Image 1 (cartoon, rainbow, N blue to C red):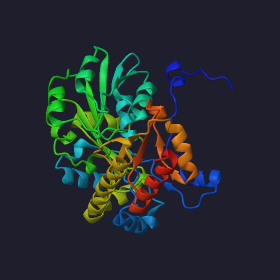
Image 2 (image 1 turned 45 degrees about the vertical axis):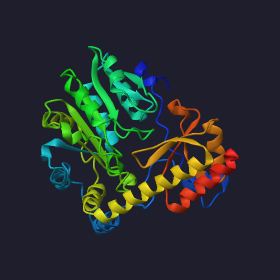
Image 3 (image 1 turned 60 degrees about the vertical axis):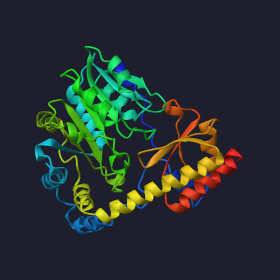
Image 4 (image 1 turned 90 degrees about the horizontal axis):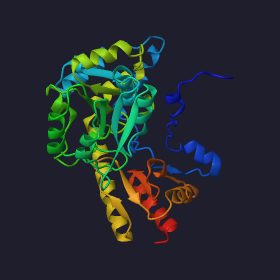
Length: 363
């Protein structure tokens, strides 16, 4: 079948997710595999969210609230913003797609860190725009380098804070200066998928800029800290005029009823969130100490994952760890062929990773 497809669509490389556990079981026959590749919550979902879903199952024959009224208002109350500032999405990925669909045209330019989350590149290309990657320095983004890449064609700038895949952050003073000097037509998309895990007080929040007069859109998700990745529920916080544009193109019922129900319950589950943060921070510190003892290089992270420099082929180490039932993420496709990204698991899983790495690296 011969199709007429724009060249900018043909140039897109599909997003490649982390290897799922069932696939490892099929390929290697390993029953007790662990997955530390997709930055998921090792505790599972919020118990309150699970209970809320179970109570709502009898209403699956009804369409969801298309506007997400109750969840939007609960988020607004928690974040101390107006409901008009919030747009719900099928994961924060959908918000990224809506922003690029509304704001970008063929010939426009979108800046983004490189390496970073590949959906920035993919959604910009879907709009016919040109994605421009700004290389990291010492695994962190220097906003001065971003500024140098701004042209009259620049319409959007993606920043993720904490950064994926490095876990580094942009500091408040640098972001303040950057946003203050930004030309008015440019929209800054500040992806905060891991913001709950940050321990450094110098990390800014997108909410700090909501009333700045600049077009700053913050993205957040229930996938990580709240353990609802399988439900695909996220949201954007942005100026009302920008939110209204996204609502014009938002698909009907894009946030399903169980996702909305679970998210509302998860927002009240402070005990679960605190357990998650304690587990992640303790797990990071344990693995830092273990890698220090092994003499393996890594970067300290403000997220629930961190980057390890193996000094050898990441793909080879990835395959060797798979054979031991440990799934991590090779960073070769991110332009880091010697690095893997590992998220924090349960204590036993963290120990198993370290022991498996010892065997693979021969240290």
